[in-house]
Length: 203
Image (cartoon, rainbow, N blue to C red; front, side):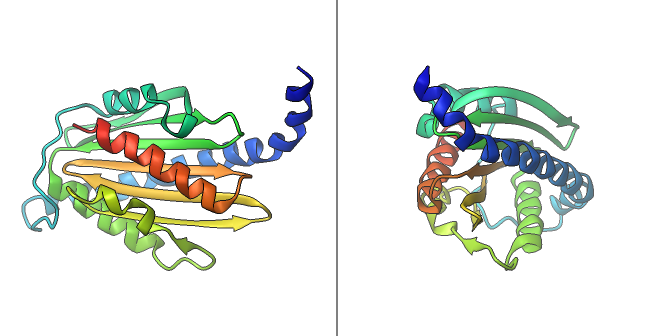
């Protein structure tokens, strides 16, 4: 009990920042989905895919549940929610906690086609590539590009590390948002672990 009490002040700040950051991230994701989904739908008949034509039948909720069961990098599921559902795509998101105070927000979107997923990915990445102050960490996701694409970026400000990673696997879009007061390099390891669990569960 004494150890827990002494750790509370150290994790309070990143916990608060995590909640705020994740809410903002979810709002951004919801907004981008609303703006892009129409274009992604039309692109399924006009834009050839550069990814393998892997079709994933699992639902977004099932992918998250399966990944969470593995406790990737020590993360434990806190709660999961459904965000959107339509004939074009379905999205679910969840928050996972790590004992060291790190938090992860994961989002899984299952589209009706691989082309729609790739179109969404390309437009999203185009909006965030080259943002000032961010470090490209796409190399951390290199092993998850057999059936699609990945992009990762992050920053370390005032000893708070934030990393975002997105990948596609066939018709599934995977997103991981991490925040912590551990080192940036250690958080990169968490990105690989959490994304890996989602990637393996998307089958």
